[in-house]
Length: 424
Ligand code: IZC
Ligand code: ZN
Image (cartoon, rainbow, N blue to C red; front, side, top):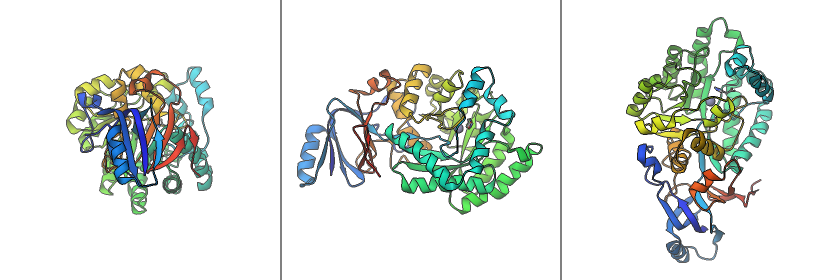
């Protein structure tokens, strides 16, 4: 038995397992002051006032109780990142310099760099090499309190290399404490060999790649980069509908760079989530609210691309459930700090600290179909927990851009202890 004793705050984020939190509900964290959390095996068995936790432990605990003192600290659910491109080879730091000199993200892609640069490196890498590079990124996620992430393919852009990425993700899900939920995103860019006939590539995606990925059970979701100069809304719909036919639930990279009808398309086809949404239209936002499409916002990407972030306030006020993510990728967001994304959500999008935490826990869990198991601290849920060196949840956003993660419990096991790695 493991007992987290007398935390200044336990932010349970309870009450949202059935549906993502919207509007004012995103502010309701159901915080317990002077709280205790008790874990038995892989599950949370008690959460409440510390005085009651003491009694629970004395009645059920027996001899073998690992007590972790949390006085003056804040306990949250393990953080969840619902949008990453974490499996890739190499890095693209030279693009930062190009962009600082005035090149845009899209110009770099159109000149054969960007996603295509990472595609060349990922195609050239072995599965073992990909696993090795990605493992280091997962270590960093965990050190920042992130216990589950979504992981997209999309740097293979041909069957064998897309499968290689997805198999690497599956291997790491089994091996590493961080859990990975896979998304097939072969529609991340049009590869050079189909530059003159993008529709032929769409056919390869729908008739060859999606069936192969589904048959091997390598992904739960299908995603498309629906953007001017990448995939049109019509092509995106074709790809996502093919995914649906094969049991892959739709997600969509929508309206990141120009308004392009991505939010509207997400609502029309019943996507689980639409991501980015920097330039989403008012009609698109309304349609998402009506259909309950989750907005996955990526304030680190706007920050790193030096552009205006999504209008989170408008979305929350319209009733769209909002989640947050790092977008971890080698081009537009090379960071594993979901905590810093929360800082940016507050400081650049005016989300409140409570909304930001909801967005990285229960709403993020809904965006990857795991809200029945993770995303809140409630008896019966998986024991994924973080102790932050912060006296309350507001302090987590105020003492910004540093890693306040102190202890991380994954599946009931302390994997980061006092900021130090505690796993093989
Ligand atoms: O590698 O640039 N936006 N996809 C869509 C990305 C960014 C990842 C990349
Ligand atoms: Zn992305």
